[in-house]
Length: 163
Image 1 (cartoon, rainbow, N blue to C red):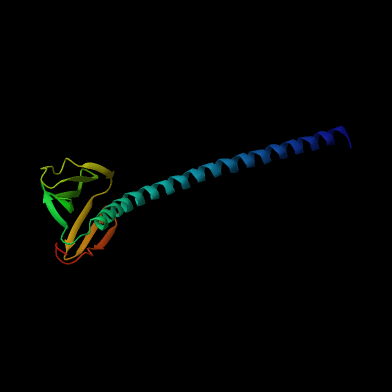
Image 2 (image 1 turned 180 degrees about the vertical axis):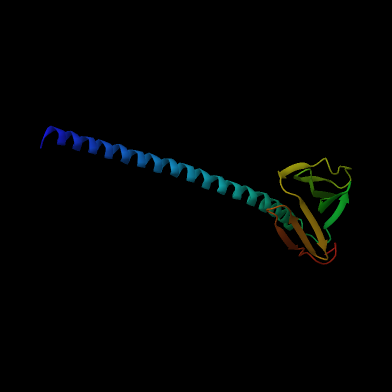
């Protein structure tokens, strides 16, 4: 082997190594870019699901906790539909108001005679608009928007207040 052939072989080996390294770097770069896009999509989907499911689950759990005969109703306060859950503790009647206002779900737990109302509650979570309807013993809760969902709850406690 002459010196020129040896140098050519060394140059080919070096060029092959550099090209292989560049291919590796490009593959790593594309993997990071694709992974970033996948992460962004997963995060967006999780946020949409969170806003839909958490509001529905929260209201459903509150209704299930307070589902006593004649104690779950819909009312309106200052033009805002309010889910009203009453409960008697010792000799006092307490009310939990759940309502949607200003892009948020709110809750107010208070004595029935306190005079507190919409605007005095605690913020539960930021979510898409929530609407509620009661038809006979069925409560229909809906979240609106692109990720809107719907839930029907049967108010299982029947009978009168004295049972």
